[in-house]
Length: 152
Image (cartoon, rainbow, N blue to C red):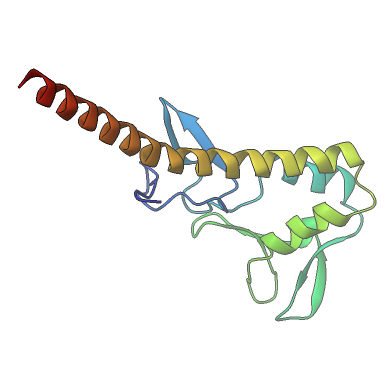
């Protein structure tokens, strides 16, 4: 990958692990630059609707499990799904729960996965575009050089 895509708002790189990516005016950016890997809207909704009565995240530091409603949100610093005890980020633990929870209908689980995969693919494809454009430009330059040689 020759050129790294960057978010025009925060100027940090866009990575395939960033789960909340938006496209606007032909450019990709983070929906929330403070939390590029936060749970997406569909994922949060699934936790609230289907998992409100049981633990959805485990803190490896504290050794405790938490329901979605127990997790802390710190908007000023940019954090959701934080451990109430030590403020560790439990986003990945909650995401893993979504992939394995028997209470979620399979269709909901598939949509949450599809949403994450779509964001990953969008970033990967966008990263490949500059490389492809570079190859095309070199081909055009070679063709022009051949044409000039022919004229001479």
